[in-house]
Length: 194
DNA sequence: TGCCTGATGTTCT
DNA sequence: GAACATCAGGCAC
Image 1 (spheres, rainbow, N blue to C red):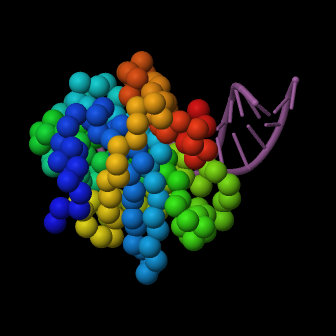
Image 2 (image 1 turned 90 degrees about the horizontal axis):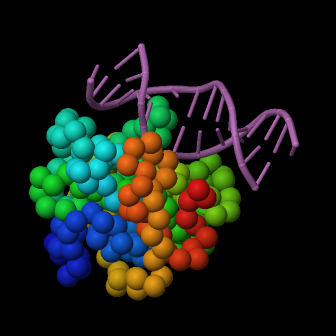
C-alpha cells in the first residue's frame, strides 16, 4: 500500500531523509486509542559514521538498518531506554534517521502521551529519543515494523522549507560529534534541550 | 541554571 | 567487562 508519493524518498541518503521527515506525522494505535504527533527533530546516521550502529557492519542487532527504507529500527540503551529510528537509504546501505522529538497534534494526543510518560507535563513529554518512545509506547516489539501499516504509521507531509530548518551537530554521542546531521524545526518548543 | 550521579540491560570485544 | 544515539533527581551556586 502506498500512502504517499514521497515514500520512495525514504531510500535517499539519511541526511536527506532526516530533513524530509521533519513535519511528517506518526500515528500510533495503542490500547484502543490513536495518538497522532508531528516529527520536529531528527538525526541522520550512516555506515561511514563512527557514531552509527551500522558502522561496524551487519550484526543481529543492526540488520534492520541494512534492510528496506521505511521500516522501524528500535534499540534498547542504557539499560532502561528505547530509541527509535526510521531506516533510510538503499537496501544494504546501513542508514537510518533517529527520531529525537515529536509534538502532539491535539489536546487529546497530549493527554495520552503525558499519561504514558507517567503524568509528566509541559514541553518535555517527548523531547528526547527515549522520552518519545515512552510517550508513544514504542518498544522492541516494534523493531522491524513496516511504517506503512498499523499500529505505527508514518504519514509524509509536504516538505518543510529549508529556511524553517535548523541544522546543528548531533548531541548525546561520543563519536563523530562534528557531523552537522541534527535537524529541527525552527522555533518549535518541543525539541531537545541540549 | 548547571553539574553530577545512579539506574539499568544489551551488545560487542 | 566496558561502552552505550538516556533520563531524572539532587545538590550547589
